[in-house]
Image (cartoon, rainbow, N blue to C red; front, side, top):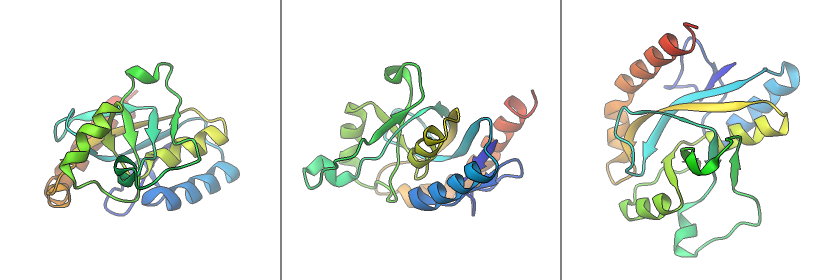
Length: 177
């Protein structure tokens, strides 16, 4: 089953589950309890820490939940903040999820040093829910912006074209089979 965040990231072939970590987890959990899918595919936009260009399409089965304050030693977490269903996590594209979008360019290198390439607000919770229900999961993302001071403006500017490209990619590659 294909899922998306919803609102401005809605597709006719995907079920919207909410924006951010909390709403997506609540709504996906509800679906998994009532009508468990055989497979979860999440599709949406992502910001790049620099290794991927705008409009690149990237697949992943791995996510983290690291807040920017972690890099300044202003926070810590007692919970496991890395989840994956990839066979080899070192070769998978790692996605960071937070309810906040990174705008500080100086943090990009710190994420890249941890093998984290992209950020998407929902993917960490998607994988956590899928693992809780023992459902295979993956994500397909299109880059809309870089994680810098222009992140929001570039996201808005590139979003429509990115959603069209991602929709075309999914329809030709996945739904066409």
